[in-house]
Length: 392
Image 1 (cartoon, rainbow, N blue to C red):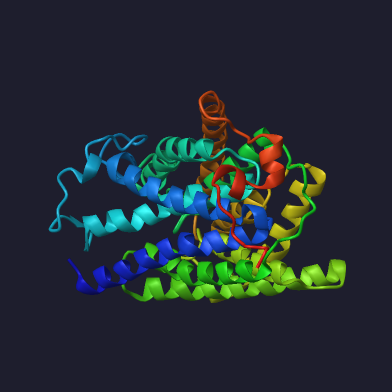
Image 2: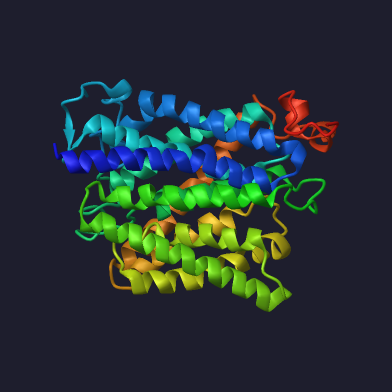
């Protein structure tokens, strides 16, 4: 065990959990109507709790067990055979488990942004549980657990390069979000502006800080590689924020706060897969393109395809993660076959699993709330609470 590596990954684990609670919850919560903000908080918090238990029970074993190239097996269920002395590389394996658990929390939580303001709470929990175990965990095994897309797999000695989750986290969450948005149908009222842009900015800031653990921690060591990953992450985020705001001003004559910070998330998602393989100059280029590319993807999904992906999960996270994965090959840090092939394989698998699970879960838990509940807001109709006392 290396004490420095262990200390850094303990910090990184806390930072990645901080991304979901409260970062993502505030970012998404500020974007919805006031009558739905608590439901967003509830989704993020409940998913964090449920995924933690399921990752401990089955998810970690499926993702990092020593099974086949396609399935990790159940040999490490409930951390069987793992104690405080067991090592994974230079880290205690129980710490590696905890670090990866925070990724298993945020990935289904990202999907929340696609279905807010109209989805059944029971459906959220059951779908998220099954999706993490049957989609996220197997894909994690394929790429990070020594599976068939990793080094020595179907793409030869140079397997897919995905440093911190462009495919594993952002492509899977983005495509699942798109699937659920299509199956749900549009909200009755899509014109209401974000009820609290301040929450959005605070949440985005927390995500930015937490992302240092997300990308820097994925080095799994306290070394120069972690320092470089952290640095390029920051440069991409800052550049994408500016390019999004500039592109907004060119098109509309104004730059918005929500746009600026959404650009931050686009830059972070785009650098995620490449953060261990590129330098600061490449990160500058990735961020500059991401701010414009993801903004145009929002327009495509909303206005051309007419899909109500409420908080633009696919356009920002899905497109950003896919773009960053491709840029690894463009900058010569990975093979085109492995990068594009893995994107295609995981993309098809994610869509199929998400559609099947949504249909199956819909048989036992309603996909969408009734029209009255949607109009009144999920806070009071589903959870019996209000975020704000308007009488005071």
